[in-house]
Amino acid sequence: MIDLRNNTGGSSKCVDRLISYFPHPDYSLYSKSQLKVSAYSKAYNKDRHPEIYSQICNLPDGGLFVIEATPVKSNLKEANLYHGKTTILVNNKTYSGASTLAHTMKRLGIARVKGETGCPDVYFGNYLHFTLPNSKIDYYISFSKFYE
Image 1 (cartoon, rainbow, N blue to C red):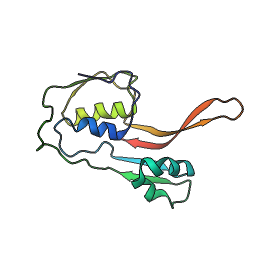
Image 2: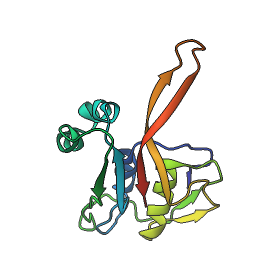
Image 3: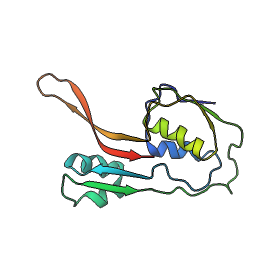
Image 4: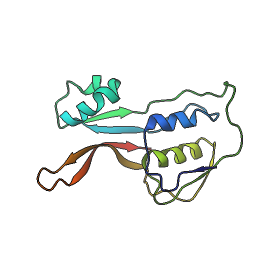
């Protein structure tokens, strides 16, 4: 049993890592994603995702950069994988990476999913934090769009 209720998500790398403990065929988490090119998205990706940064660092700001599906290879021949029954609990407060984990494990036949996530198949992520100078109110802006 994996309880993802009230889980607002996390890194796609963590999703892939969790799935790696279960037998799976080749898969991709997303059919594609889009990234708004800007000084902010370049700075965000420089250390976190150098493979993306190397592709966007010389692009003009303002455009959309499309990242096609990134396949993960099958692990069906590996030992020490969990082959038992798995149920994932979700609710309307399950978003982003947590929702992607549930949807992908269901699609791959690894787990049953109980409940409905609050996240559509297309959503925004990878946000930047800002603070308004006078009021000191914090806010976040996303620059990436993911398509499951």
